[in-house]
Amino acid sequence: MPRHSLSFVTSLAVVISGVTALQSGSPDPQRDHPRPAPAWKNRSWLNADHPLTLEELRGRVVFLNFWVFTCYNCTNTVPSLVEFDRRYRDRGLTLIGIHTPEFPPYAGEHDRGNVERALREHGIEYPNAQDNDRKTWDLYGIRFWPSFVLIDRKGNIRYEGYGEFHVGDASYGLWSRRIEELLRE
Amino acid sequence: MGLALVLACSAAGDRTVPALQISHTADGDGTRLALVASHGIRINARLKPALELADGTVLRFDSPRLTADSAYFAEPPSTIVRMPWKDVHGTLRASICGGDAACRPLVLEL
Image 1: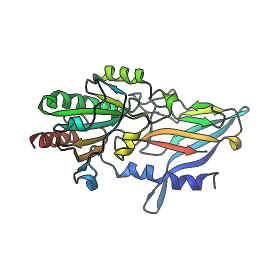
Image 2: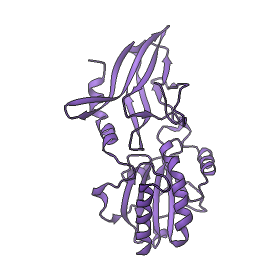
Image 3: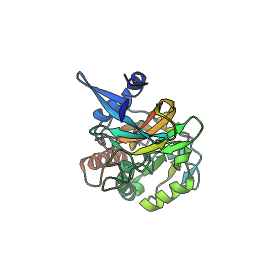
Image 4: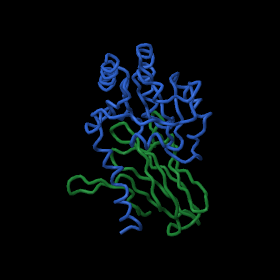
């Protein structure tokens, strides 16, 4: 028996069980029931002239994207999000990136300048919050990069999902329909 | 070379599948460590795996061979630690991605 292996099998089983269970862009069926979105309290924002609050966005549909610039699946999804922002912002959608690092600060993901560069590189113009302490990540019970939370005009979580998607694919279409459904309400 | 450590497993029926293993090979006075991902698991190369040793040193795993998109390692990333395997203690971090096109962190105390 290798050193340590017994405890590792137990502690990481959850991580890996998720690998086989997930589908790209799919919602968690247990979370499709509307429930109030928790209020984030991030203080460091980019592409915003003040820290946005959930309360001030009441009346708009809010699409949260939990991401980090070191995640390829996340940056591959950005073109879809930029397109959503372009298509739906004027109709009442607010897209918000919640930038949540995976590693400790030595990896550079906490650095505001690095996040700014990533926003420029990927043409992201929608607001982004730095979630360096992972409080918003934990508040929403997120487990994977990238993840998505769609909040209706009344501040209720209506849809959640995770995994990369691309402009024009099935998951993109699914999220488009969900956004349009909530914009119509 | 030893394939010493089962880092994570998933149960597929009666079969236990290791998701990531660490191999160790004597390298001069030290030890070369390599992370070996199982089928269907990819190791994020944009966030290189790290071993945080007890003295605060951070060692990064790396490999010159990446996938065509430069996003993942195409061969097990490795690092050299200047101590024998039996003395290696610290925190190992890796970002692993599956076929679902999502990533999750792997954190392990050695």
